[in-house]
Each structure stands twice: as C-alpha cells, then as structure tokens.
Amino acid sequence: MSREPKGRRQSYTVDVVVLTPQGEQLAILLERRGDGRDKWVLPWDTSHGAEALEEVAQRIVKRSIGSAPTWMNQVGAFADGDKHPSESELSVAFAAIAPLGTGELPSDEFAWFPLSDVPPLHERHQRMVQAAVAAVRDRLDLQPVAFRLLPTAFTLSELQQMYELLLGRRLHKASFRRALQAASLVEPTDEWRSEGRGRPAQLYRYAPKRRRRSRRGVRFDLLG
Amino acid sequence: MSREPKGRRQSYTVDVVVLTPQGEQLAILLERRGDGRDKWVLPWDTSHGAEALEEVAQRIVKRSIGSAPTWMNQVGAFADGDKHPSESELSVAFAAIAPLGTGELPSDEFAWFPLSDVPPLHERHQRMVQAAVAAVRDRLDLQPVAFRLLPTAFTLSELQQMYELLLGRRLHKASFRRALQAASLVEPTDEWRSEGRGRPAQLYRYAPKRRRRSRRGVRFDLLG
DNA sequence: TCAATAGTGTCTGTTAGACATTATGGA
DNA sequence: TCCATAATGTCTAACAGACACTATTGA
Image (cartoon, rainbow over all chains, first blue to last red; front, side, top):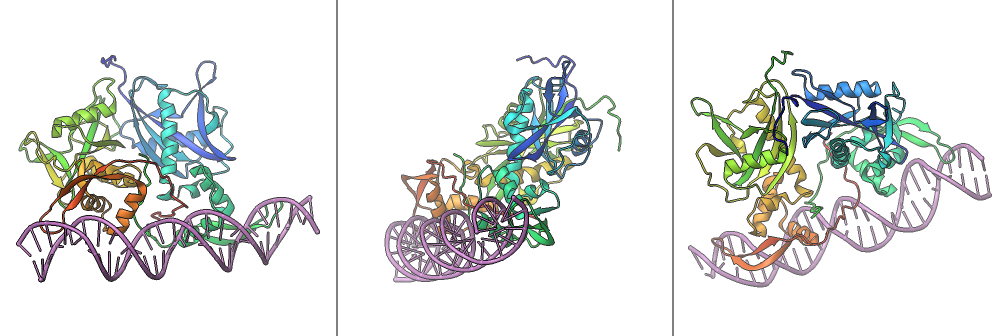
C-alpha cells in the first residue's frame, strides 16, 4: 500500500458504460486505446472545472455515438489503486442507454461488444461494467428503462423481448400483456408492422397514464 | 458559473449519512461546526492516499458513534458548485445504519436529528440525505436492511414497525407474518418479552435460510 | 394448404388483505 | 373482571401462469 500521493492524482474521471440491445443480449461501447490500437477502454474524460458530472457524461456519450443517450444514471464512485487508464485515483461511473438502431458509430475509434464477449479491461472498468448492468436491471421496475432501449414505436413482442433481455429470463406472453394493460403504460397507434411470416403486429408507443402504485404487500425477495 | 479551478479543489471528500430509528421515524447523525458551534454538517473527511472509499466511510462512522455500522452502502458521487463545507469539488456519499439503541454518542460534537426536523445544511449535504434515505428504502426488499436497524433479538411487532417506518406506510399484520414465514427469514428463540399490558411477544432472530427467488411475473410499479 | 406470429379467453393455484377468533398477560 | 396485545384461522378478490383458441399474414 503506497500512501504517498506523489503529486499526481489530482483530478477524477467520469467514465460511461453505454448499453444497447444487440440481438439476444446487451452490448457495451468501448473505445480503442494503446499504441498498437488493440487495447479497449470505457470512454472516459476528466472533469473540467465546475462542470456537473452529468454534463461530462453527456459530452462523453455525444462524442462516442454521435447522439444523446435516451437514459442515463449515475452508478457510483470507484476508487481502488491505479487500475484505470488514467492516473486518477477516483472515477465516477455512469450507465447510459442507446436505443435499438444506434448501430452506426461515427468513427472506428469506437465499437460495440456483446456482454458475453468483452475484451480484457482495466480492473476498475470491469467493475464499472458489472455495476452498470446491475443498476439498469435493478431499476427495471422502478423506471421505464426498457422503453429507452426501443424506438418510439414498437410491437408488444419487441417490448417483451427487451424485458426478457434485461431480466435474463423468459416471460409469459398473456401475463406480460395483462400487467402492461393494468399499468396503463402503452397506447396503440394505428400502424401495423409485418415482420416476415406471421400476422402483422400493432405498433405501440410509450404513454404512461395514471400512477397505480399498487404493490400490495411486502416482498421479502432477498438474496441472503 | 466560475469555470476557473483556481488551484484549489484538488481532493475529494467522503461524507456519511448515518441513520438510526428514533421513535416513529428515522434520525440522522450530524456534527457540530462553525465558529458559534451552531452550524451542523454531515460527518465527512478527505480521503488519504490510496485508501478505499469504504475504509474512509468506516473510519468516519467509528469516529462519530464509537462503533461500526451494521450496514453501509455507497450512495453516489455529488459535485455541483461549492455547496459543501470543504472546498472540494466532489464528494462521495455513503448511507450507514446504526441499530436501535445506539442513542448514546461519545461526544457532544455529534447529535441525532429526526428527519422531520433537520437543521439547515449545505446544499450538497441536503441532497445526500435525501438520496441516502431513498437508497435505504429502495434496497429494502433486496437486502435485509430492516434487521440491521434492530438488535439481534426482536419481536415480530418491532420488525413490522421497522418496515413500516422505512416504507412509510402501514402493513397488514397477518400478511406480514405470512410473507416472513414464506421467506424463512427469521427463527424464534425461546425467550419472551412482556411489554406493558398485553400478551408477551416471542423474540425472534434474523436467520435467513433458503433463497426463494420466487417473484413471479413482472411488476410495472413505476413512477411515471 | 401449412407455417408462423399476434392477440385473446378461460381455468386454476397462489396469495394479499380483511375479518374474526383465540391466547395470554397486566391493570 | 376488563383491556391490550400476540398470534392464528378463514374467506375473498386479485392475479400469475398454463393452456387453448382464434386471427392474420407469407410461403
């Protein structure tokens, strides 16, 4: 344990885990670094002056995917040793979401990697990715995260697939739609989309109405 | 908006929101500051070298209440302007829990304040308190937070009151106990406690067994 | 026609909440 | 004895999950 500040480490960084759906799973955005251009890191930046943390994160996302994220949330502060591309002692991580169809990236400095196939990262970045994915999944039933992963118009099957992707398990179709209707979260448009073979699906849009706040009872769904 | 770093603001602080039950509500721990000793702040410290954030927070709690917290979690990083007792640009907030009966404090530098009657704080500290309370309540059904607020042996009525305090609403007694039994979270001791008038209550202890992970269905209990 | 997907109706087991009842102590 | 609290049993409405069925397209 070196306890000497040594003059370096004066600032902190803001690092962003940008998530997007890609097929059956989530993908994260990485930036090319290193001499051989074969190292990958989470996009990050140091803070400038009194700029708010969210502003820094927004700027990083804009630079990375060319547009603003549809959702963003702070994950937390990470500080442990030097396992970061910068020399900074502390980093603040953000989780951001880019909707389906953000595939095209402005430069080849950036690339999407499915969560199952992430290249080796700095230790601090690894923990940030884990925490960001966990944070997005945790807030699923508290914030309408799934809708941020979809374009404004979507089919109910697409929405269900997005929930299944985020939750990591299959859902029951009829129950899913019943719960959706009870919550008054979506409204149908008058458009339909024919997707290959079967019957065309009606398109819906996100349109939350009343707040139900039902939640009967306490759930002791805990881990220990 | 002053954008000049001006040479100051090199480090960051760790600030802790220590919570304890006090009657019908939660109370937070504040430290006396200022010339007239009439100003109150959240206990905080600057980080020393490569010390982990959790270590700093633990140290702060120890100094404040004389013992380790029964639960602790990072809330997030806060940075906006100068609204902090230090000159630091960034602060990392922790939420900590002290169990019922931690009333006695080692010095009169510290005091408990019920959440309904918190003296004026620095703007950043105000936001930390709100975020910490929200974080504790959010994690109620994911982590056994309520048990950390109680001594090792407690009655089921006390446990229910603790849940009601944290959730901010009344619970149904029979349903509460049924859910508790289904989750296999507590086990009875062979002790009983007579509390004034009525029938004595059996004492229980926290003893989680199997993990149920039931949670059937999706809950769209969202805010918007 | 068949295959594939969208969308809906019905049944059943589970459970939260309401209500009532018994149990057991103190005043 | 009366009162207060603990603890439990029963009923009901709500709801998740299963299953089956209809609807509507492309091949």
